[in-house]
Image (cartoon, rainbow, N blue to C red; front, side, top):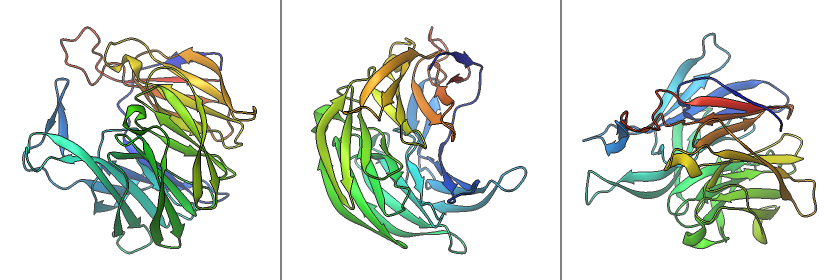
Length: 318
């Protein structure tokens, strides 16, 4: 990872992209949080908000178009990757980390719902609502389409779900640090045998082992930046990249770190800065040659803040 460039862009959506085996992406799924708005740097709950929605977007159309919209709880709080699609594009799994507090309609509280959406139904529909942990957020599905992992931000746990056809069922919870550790994002290696989970509270990335539906904490942790959240693993499984959010409160520039997954044991081997604070959106290109990072860059702050900018910023490293 040697060079970074940047320019102003709009903020990214919470989106999952469906990848059919051996084919280009066909659909995107966007989770749309209708409960809150950012008013000059302050997040406020919308009075009598409409239901949250999940939009299914046809990427084959030019320009891409929304082909269906389903009501399902979700939240903008947490990593951008809070939606996952099975490899056959049959199901979308959507987490909800926050909901409106029924005791105080001006505030939010942690949610734990996981919605299962049948994308092949006409129209698409929610076919199950399951429970994960407190503040269920980042989610990943293995390439085999048989297992989903959900990182729970408040609990500091990972919820494990088995997938068989259109049936998704909970099969366990992995403890790796508890509330002191927190959670964030989870990513699964291409061979389906290992997962990485970020721990935003104590600045670590934990390694989990996977054998079928048996998922265990290996007790191996890595340290990469401050408040690591978003993760991605290269398509060949050789490396991972994690972005940090330390500067979100102070305006300082953040960093991304490179994890060597071929090392025994895996370890952080490089860390570089990005141009701006809050490196929350991150994706490795299919060929593994480029890492794209979306940085908030103060775009969610009050306009009078010295750290305010009117747009986010992309950075990329080759």
